[in-house]
Image (cartoon, rainbow, N blue to C red; front, side):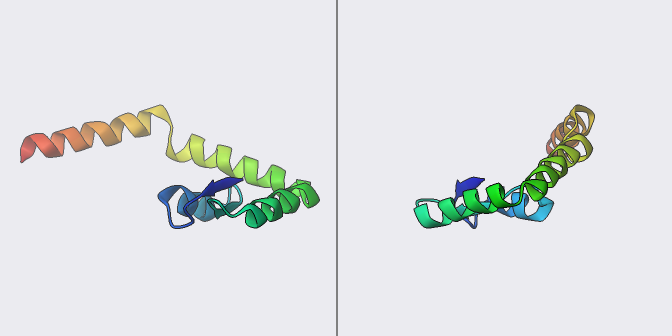
Length: 79
């Protein structure tokens, strides 16, 4: 459950990946509803956790991240 600016990159990523529940920061009712949603549907909670792990292992592994940095540095050097 992420309680952040609903338009933040973090909330958009969580929604895109399907790895959690998001709610607007400082909205206590939305936060409580998110907790209730996760509590009532524990199977979905577990599935969201697996989606998060899948995203991390497929999209953010070390080799992929290092490759992004290397490419960015190479692009900067070429300019």
